[in-house]
Length: 187
Image (cartoon, rainbow, N blue to C red; front, top):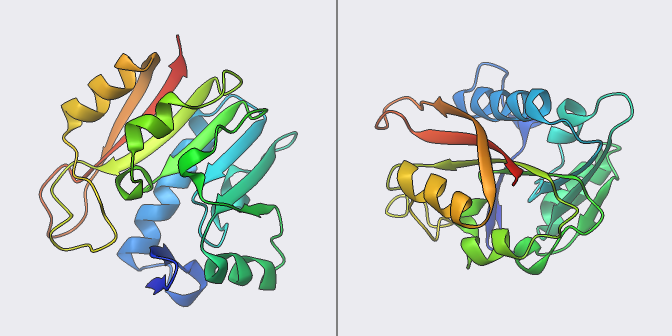
């Protein structure tokens, strides 16, 4: 179930849907892939929603901190015992001190997505980013941008990211591939 709040964002509450729900499955697959791809141990989960990705990203020795501006989502996380998060709009955040960044289904929501990536701290050595690569603005009021696969890849490379892995994900009844997942490292 995708929920929204007055803070101008959308989020999924995985406890409010069955494990057979397509959106639940898509989100869990993204976090699992991100967790497997990441090598770092100090991970920022950008726009973490109710921080459900924490449980998947967390491995022995890893510190995972979620960032989100949506108070409703963070209150839900806290009510479930997850308190490793910071209430903050990530648009101007540099994530200084973090080695890794997870940015799942967030890029299309940012006012200035390329500026966001360009302003990341030098401590961030790897990123997992996923975003739709089909037009979505016309049916999702929270999406500010539409991207093509080439735009995402070339934009990241122009900012000094070396694309190490790419994966695609399809959503039922939408053009294929629907999403691109990228694991990239700093050159």
